Image 1 (cartoon, one colour):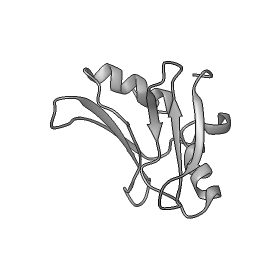
Image 2 (image 1 turned 90 degrees about the vertical axis):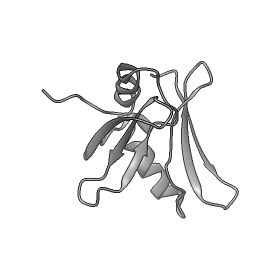
Image 3 (image 1 turned 60 degrees about the vertical axis):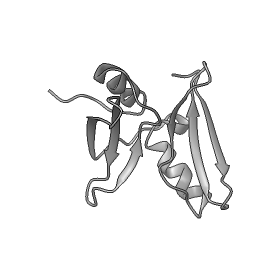
Image 4 (image 1 turned 30 degrees about the vertical axis):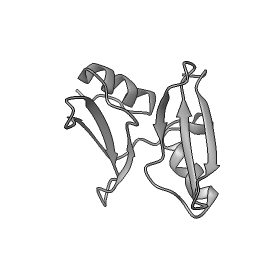
Length: 109
């Protein structure tokens, strides 16, 4: 996924966010919330591979949304707050898992 483009930017409210775009232009990951400090936004992005770093601790969940598309969400270890989520739905669970792997998910046996 080295061809992915990362963007750290300020939204309309002045909060910091990140997004990860694939070479085909599709957004394959994005911040689930805005951050007051740019450093906090970068720290969150690094959980998912920004700057070549990953810290995927926490629980990962795969589910079908109301439209019947598969998505993933990543929850923090202690608080169970959602700290990452797929930015789009996928036709099959395998595609959602592949997108999560792009963000540091590793299946456990």
